Length: 435
Image 1 (cartoon, rainbow, N blue to C red):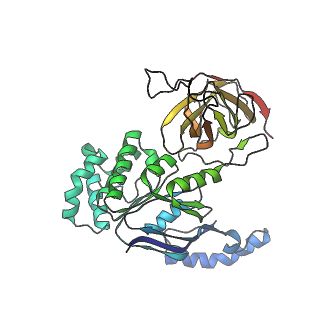
Image 2: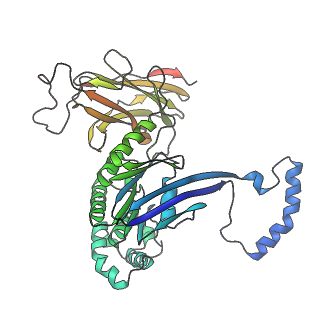
Image 3: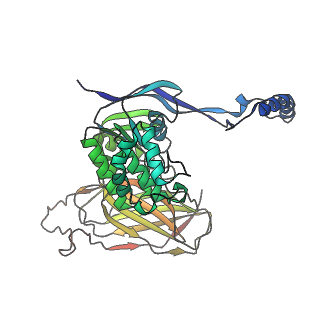
């Protein structure tokens, strides 16, 4: 008989926008507020403003009617756009927040890594925080001590283990947080997309550890915007859309459905609207933002596929919101279900751009040496040495086998093996008025 690790039924979480809650209120504060309330309400009415709290708040459902089950020992992913409810779901499963409706039953000890530094006391040392987290998980001091050296070695903080956490960098906190969550033998490991903060080597180490946890019969629930990571770690996947479950099933099918749904509105001329596209988690600057993308064939016709060895043309539109000294666009191609970067091409530094205008640049790759398959298109925008915008899944493109077969196909230079040989050229920006 299959054992259930997580059962979610009719789950919903409602938040009130505009509601202000005091973290600490004394009786004296409450009495003073009660005496001042009538006069304050009268002044608001005379000014034509809202008179009560109900007029100042709105309800927002981060999750609604979410139901699913996770079998013990399964590795399941959770994907969806920003605001789909992924983090809210994990917080409910981790007992950090309570649902507004429905229920979530979790059978087993949970180890969660939701945000960098979650579960750490800033004044305590790394050593003390490890034991504190172990106690929270219900482990004895002897059980934690048996795992302590392994945790410190994994986190690579042996020189700083007796230093207060408040002096750790974000990377050190991330390493220690994951090491604690993964090594203290939780029956259910819940990981939000905090791994994006770590370096590549640490990400690989974490993915390997999650694989070990899953293969040992424990349950893994993993949230990520990186489809390659989701594909490598999980067997099944939940797709969330606007707080509801859009799909539950095999990971490859879930990713395909998610990518199809993420294709932004495409105009008749093949333009993909990127204004509401999923941004990289660490993107926060807005001096320059991507607006559109078109993929063209050798005859400048919009397309979603091209033949092997034939040109690929990418037309990228962006809007300059603030003055910058220079801007630089980057476009990359990676595998559809893996994160291998086949190539990433940076543009020249574009200068003398005027704020408030829309610009278009084209990248021509002629010929392309990609093997027949479907690939993901990534975009990065940099200005004055800082990243301004990044879209990991801007579009997808399919490479078709050449009509004449493979007689003249040449993918790689013999001596480069894993590197692609590309001929490319960027155009100068063409200025358009922002509508």
